[in-house]
Length: 208
Image (cartoon, rainbow, N blue to C red; front, side, top):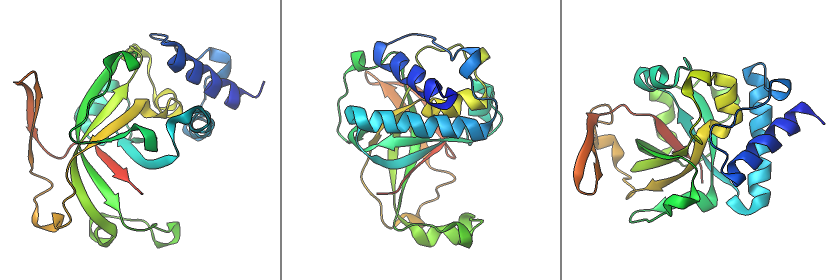
């Protein structure tokens, strides 16, 4: 079996079967980021075929030093967000639909149009004309209780950067008036504050 498809199939079955801590066998583990993104492409195709919906946006994982140190990966990684896993506030999701659910506070960005590679590289100044709206958001992650001491960038990328969906708040079209680099955020569980900090968090970019 092709190792790219074999790795994607292994990760897909692990998620569907609820296998906790399941890593890729050494024989099909991607050796570098390029191979890992090929695995991710194949895995995304399996999820689309299984009913997750088309790819409707992208997450950008590990953009902050805090999260990189937590996971033990020193570079940002991307993953797809599927249409049927995008929820809008207020939303409820079933806890038992996940193996090991986690949530992260985010700022979601709605992109108004495609950004051609030829116009890059993009930075804060030249990309803002393409931002139609910003939203407070919660990313839903499912790492299947993997030991983060064993996670590297290729494994994280191959497994779609652990994305399992997101919850989007109200669209803010006049976001230019907001201090996105200093917005306060709080995470509450059953009414109790369990986390409080200012941006910048990781980002979720929605393309559709």
